[in-house]
Amino acid sequence: MGWVTEHHPTTDELNACVQCGLCLPVCPTFRLTGRETASPRGRLQAMSAVSAGVVEVDEAFASIIDFCLGCRACEPVCPGLVPYGRALEGTRAEIAAQLPGRERQRRWAVGTALGSRRLMRLAGFGVSMAQTFGLLGLAPKKYRRVSNGLRSLRDRGDSVVGDVVGPGDIGIIGLLAGCVQDEWFRPVNRAAVQLLGMAGYRVVVPERQTCCGALAAHDGKAAAAARYQARNFDVFGGFDQLIATAAGCSAHLAGYRWPGHSPETLDVTVAVARAIEAGRLPRSDIAKGDIAIQDPCHLRHAQRVIREPRLILEAAGYRVVEIDDDGLCCGAAGLYTVLQPEASERLGAQKADQVRSVGTTRVATANPGCEMQLRSHLGIDYEIRHPIEWYLGSLTDEGLV
Ligand code: SF4
Ligand code: SF4
Image (cartoon, rainbow, N blue to C red; front, top):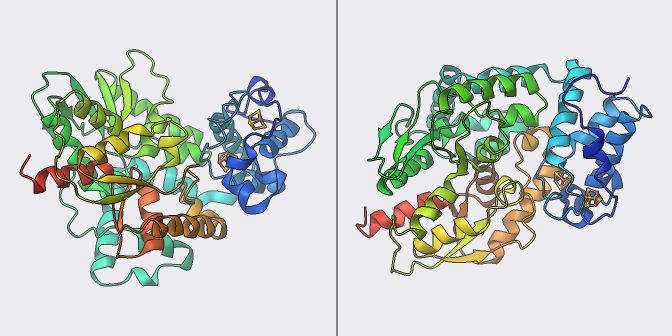
């Protein structure tokens, strides 16, 4: 039957692969298994076989695609500039269209719940109550990693949605609060609003915004992702800049094709690093010791943002310690922890070992999924926060804010 939707990988995208194999050593799933079908090249060949009508979009094909993390570590090393992430999203949309019965619950969760602030608040309240009464241990086993990695929601404070902060001398920023980020990682959003306001921006967090659509798009729910995107076009179309505080969201925003004026979309680490370099935010002179840094795939591989989180941590007074020169995925990867628990477990354990080996219990990561994966593997002796939280904490301790 071949492809049936408009989202499928194009012939140009697939033919860009010259089958050189340079992507194999950087692919976490190939490194775990050694199987060609678990490599970028093998997956692209499987997609090409569907395009040519040689194989069907069936369960066997879907399992090859399901095992991919979507980490995009294969993109920066690729001489053919294969847009692997785009081809993967299109293929997942095809699987969702051609095998609709396999994921009904997920369709509701990513297609409806993430876009509803009311439902997300309800979920946040439920999790907060479960934490208070010690009920998270009763969660089904496959959700245990997620629940063990959560921050305490009891003291998360208020949402920034609706806030308007800062003088606006140097521009107006729209802040995407995010779906999961707004509920479970509010201190990161608050740090972003405070720091960017201090830097001289007017930071606006509009009420009508919705989820960026990253989780829906990565899961093949193309219609839901397009619906979320259309709402955000309306809400953020007039801003100079659009900032997201989760690396997965900023990477997805970078792929938006705006119908009219296009705001500059940035990860918050880039915006804060620029403000520090321009002298609009201070640097600490007080040395505070080592901190381990973990690069989220959607920052390092998808956006090629590597320098900025390090600059922020150094400006906070820390000595940044590298844990992984290849920037291998930690195994969180959106819903991967739940959908592919065994591979996710192995990658998470490997990343945790790398952190333990450098001998500091401070860890910085700029993505909520990575933070939860690290915390669930490292335990409560490790303090894991976003780079801008470490930075704001440092300025606050020194009385610089
Ligand atoms: S590096 Fe790029 S061109 Fe080479 S095999 Fe991998 S995807 Fe194909
Ligand atoms: S996205 Fe990640 S897991 Fe998937 S093929 Fe590329 S490197 Fe491998």
